[in-house]
Length: 353
Ligand code: IPM
Ligand code: MN
Image (tube, rainbow, N blue to C red):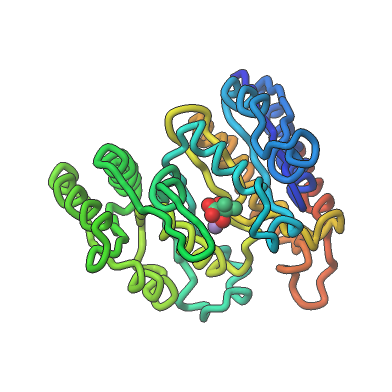
């Protein structure tokens, strides 16, 4: 296979973890005889500083022409506490999602046996938890009509039938491939937009008779996720609820630095860690590269390269078992490996396999 990859390192720890993702990608391509070509592009605060736009036209073109985007992180504290800033790094990410039509964000919540003690939840609750959150990514409050003056502000949570149908379809199809249990998360007791979601889900459910479909209010789902994470198989929800629930989901596994994601839709798919740019750690070689590396596994799996994906997952598990870990997940008294060292260990594992 020939792969043309757009690499968007972004801000904070983004560039450091990006390097590790690219090296793993190259090692796998060499092993399996794939030809890979990388195009680097600017985004986020880095792009604002250099060209005044968090998602420049040039970056859009590079992404559009690529087979996949390997994205790292955007965000910089100099914009966070300035509500008057005209452009923000996050707008780059939102522009990318909208322009590439990335309406389906797939966020797996998985646990690693050897890290159960790192979870804020009791091990017996977490052990074996494994579910997918499918987050709608190009609609709802993030993109609805907005208004702000000194005395009043609003965001509009609008969804149309086609937007709801296409994301629910993704949810039902993933449920069919997994344990055939879909939970539609909404706030239908209060929000009109949620009532339409629920109505459409009820219309679609009979077409998937093998899937057990249940409906849960988002406040209840937030509670259930920590009370009984093993309840879930596939959940599907709107943009804002999915944003909040996936941060909650990510900490179940013990570290935010472990979870990858895939965003797919109408154009080039994007693979990225779910964590942010962690600006305080920039340049310190302490960021966990595993979420980025596992994003590369999701990239291969998207192209149906199952063995490639499996080898990356095996290498990641082997690194954890060998205690080759970044500080936030290292066992007590264990040596602290840096971002680069964890990445190189995984690359060597792949090469020697
Ligand atoms: C995420 C992030 C983004 C979001 C931010 C950075 C705009 O939190 O991908 O979950 O809110 O979608
Ligand atoms: Mn988020």
